[in-house]
Image (cartoon, rainbow over all chains, first blue to last red; front, side, top):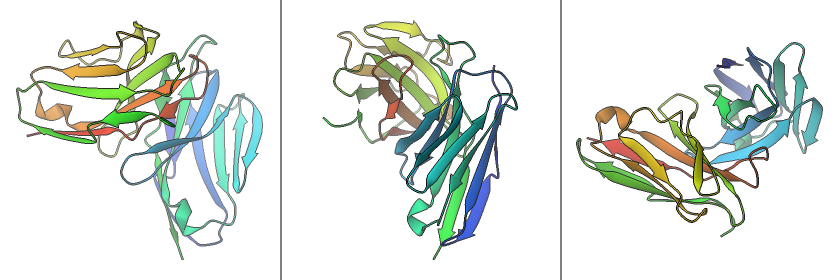
Length: 111
Length: 113
């Protein structure tokens, strides 16, 4: 079974700061997801990536397959970015569909 | 609907009772997943449907848990003889296929007293 570790567990930032959240996993994967969960439970998929880098607005996700590591970056952070960010991996195996989740990183952005 | 919906949003029950949790996936999505999220933890996989059949139910914790998807759309997660340890948020997700992005519902918060 894949072990997914996220760091930090909690992160407090001032508005405007650049934020990095890290995710490492133990076994090869077919894809990695970054998810955002707001208070109340709703989960939104931010990125699904299997190599390289993806960007959407102020969010950037990178993955290094060889090092089994991914990062989620938020530029010019804003209080509305406050949420729990969860890394989830799919695989190993191209036919795998089951997601294994990290425990999440709770981000608080202070005005 | 535009997204995955789950009902009820909250359910309080007593130990030993039976509960049903419903998930309405996005129209046209053939894959449906159930997850359970305990307080302070990430979600854990319970079961995956491809169409009407449970392709993988290896995450169901024991035989008190059962899920169906009789017409390949709506799914019901059924929990018999509930225990306090079953208290969690039960999340449903759907995707167009097994390898596509999963879209999550808002969850059902179950509290067993």
